[in-house]
Image (cartoon, rainbow, N blue to C red; front, side):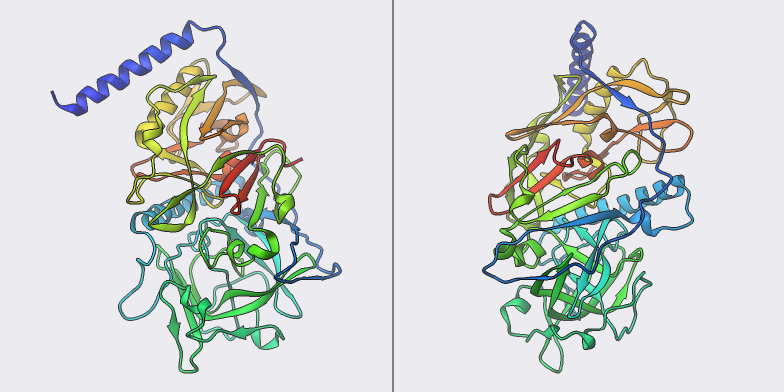
Length: 472
């Protein structure tokens, strides 16, 4: 017998028995979703930049907290619908880039005639969704920088520009900074680049290239960064004199990945290799999102799951997802095998700040979607929308009951608020189930599902945690 029809028959029977079990059960768990429209007013952009400064040395354990804002705040004169469509477009680029990098691994993007690092950044894909205000140099010049857990290299646009894209702030000029210093070609920092370059002055060059043809290239250097008064010296960063791509007004990127050149790895002694962020629902809260570096980043109420190492790629935060529940019942047809990272570095699940919509391998997504549809059979269905194939017409309603959804990580059950999986997609009352399937073996937990949690990255303890009350 052909295994494909047999597998399909088994899957159909499994969902049928799931339907029988929940339809005969009186304990199916629901929660209330208060229906809020798409956000119409981006939060105002304001940061205090004149606080008293403190210097963080290599032997000092420090902490700092920064406000985060979404890229929509830099997009003027656009409707909520236009912003949402742009977000989904960026998301598609982002997922394509991450899955491509995961498929090939480290040291794979060098080109014969030049040099390249292997980092693919969501910023160039337009998908480094959250940014903050950081001072660069001495005296500090404050610029918007995107924070990205899917990238390692820290970089900023620099004058003189051979080619620079448009940014909100003046381009940083390293000649006016007392703390800027080049890196020699043979230095350990330069050699940490996957494929470093060298100029005629024997100083290090970097290049970061992207899946859509965007890139940044320039001098690899060290510089002082200032975070709301806390100065961190000798951070290795790319000073980009030739930059091209869809960079949405920010001046550069703060890489928060697990690799050797990421900001958390570089500042391990100062911040104990710990940081956490809280991403709030922009449509339902006036509170800003935030990121914390240092020991206070670890919430006492967080539920932790171990980080998994990918032998092929050191940038991403891999975790073990073992199952998903809908309405308090484990979804049949979803097993840990769908999300397993194999010995060759393929498959697995990553936590990513720059991806919006969670992607699951196609069989897992189909089972989750079908279970959710059964639990929402009383709601009026609507047409598919973009990548979403499970949508509802909730016009005229102020709230609805939806089945609970819980992500089961190894050692940590994460119950999602209803706003994290049934989201508005227009101003007419259409809401869609905010998961999607992927033909790639890589599953990605996106930032819509992370909203409202303090997500803790404890690299020292090799774990990631979720605190449902950590944003208060």
